[in-house]
Length: 325
Image (tube, rainbow, N blue to C red; front, side):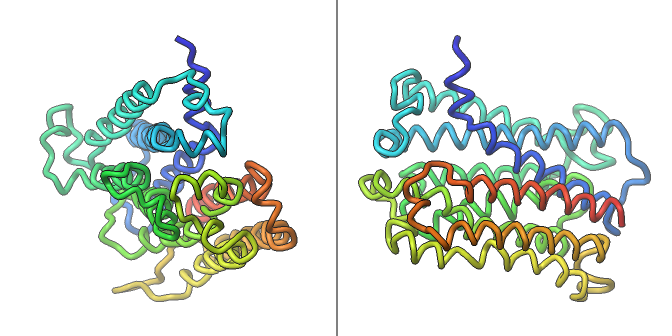
């Protein structure tokens, strides 16, 4: 079996943010004031590693299923893709997606906190509340299906709702899923951290749509560039490149319910991280707003690559801001 077409369909670069997002959320939970664990163990290390790999696998599966339902669009936008060239059949890709989805969600059921992790049977039959990480991952999985599959809504057709679906799965829930590995999620902090990435992805996810206008219009996908044109759409998404990062320093000042501040990471490092990310955002905006029509003519425009790189910097930097507090 030739695996190269499958690797191409998985789009490896897009798997890095969910992988690091889980590790970032886990690092924040571990270093927070809410961590109930006495010491870091190899068991906890493997728990985080498995969860991160499963998030990356789930992203690959969502890429598979998206391409299954985008074959006609991709004939115009991305004729080099394996399904368009007939290297992989749509039914093969659909079965492949199902198997990878299965592989990404089943291991999460076994990631439960003490004392439910005593042995294999204890993990299986742990109370439903102990499987909070599983339910978060299931929510991520459902979002990816709702985004692509017509019978489940295919929010990809509905402009900003496509962005909302992606932002919930890849932003809010990824961060909360990582946090759930080491600390309770019935707190403001993990969801506040997730909302930073939610608002960032809510706008910046549209950068991939600019070069797909022709095919998306034919396929009935009313993305922001299709509806408003490149120039106006670029202005509409521009705040997302900068504004969400202000939530990091803000979270070090806002009081949390009960006691302390919402964010328990190092205030100095969170402010420094926000400054770096804002500079990255300003640089990306400079590329976008100066020549917005170039976004519609270049696949994987540099701003799209910078968007992913900025998110990676944010995830790594956030984890460090907590671990070094």
